[in-house]
Image (cartoon, rainbow, N blue to C red; front, side, top):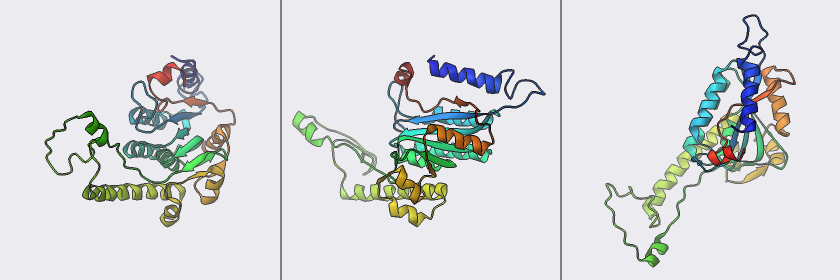
Length: 272
């Protein structure tokens, strides 16, 4: 176990599980803490050795935050360029459940909070970011590499049997045809509308105002504040202070690691 993980478990024991915390002593004073959850790297990527964020550990951490009485609010430290839509929506839904349980969730932005990362930030009660952090990139990409020329040069033969004309539309050995591009465009538009609606709801903005800036561009946080895409400028400590204030916690209430989106085995071994 890494030093950071060990410290987090010790802090959790002190504030939530040990004799001095909320669960200790029937007449004891119930003290609370912040739960800290990190979203680092591509969302929906990952795997055992690679970095990135997969749904299950993040969902478990959020469920734990919702159920544990000592967790009074959650700070999500987000440093992500985005990623898979499905994983993002799974996590956003669980953030909503934490908020519905009466526990504020504050997004603390690192260097980048774009695309799916920004989607998650918009699911939180507040967004706090340093002035030069990059936020936004509201939009959807559907892409695949095409290896047709490489396979032709290698003399590779290709055979397949498909059950329908579009079953192999993600095959790497050929480009999309016009009909497939139209179908994918419809899917892209549907997901894009979901993204716009999520941002509009989370930021309390009109959907038309979101669409006006939803061309895939990123904004400096200093710009995003003026557009309503970020609540205030500040660093990680400022985000902790906002969460403590929203939860009615004292200034020195601890922040306890919940685990979740911190990458794979390699990241754990390296202590990242």
